[in-house]
Length: 97
Image 1 (tube, rainbow, N blue to C red):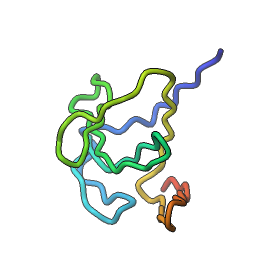
Image 2: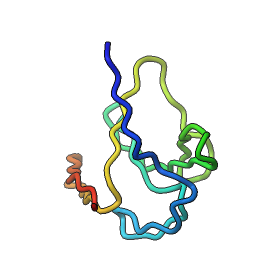
Image 3: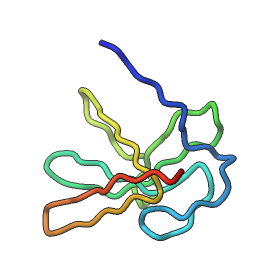
Image 4: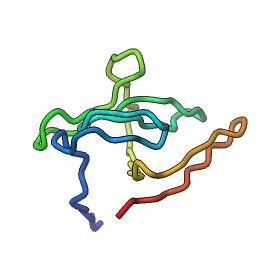
């Protein structure tokens, strides 16, 4: 299989960012969602140094548990929108230039 690496990685040096949930976050952190077991979990992503991997924590600050198997990640821009209509989540992908 082929992999594509896009060099638009969330950086701790990026300063303050207003994210898709309307809140302000320091560079290197922000809101995220995990779809697992038929549910959507709000989490926070964090990357302390440019050379670090991105980690996910629950809103309580504890590491969010992954499950065995394959994991897919989709990155959306801070200017993207999302909404929850019952059990249906809609994400509108936008990347500011």
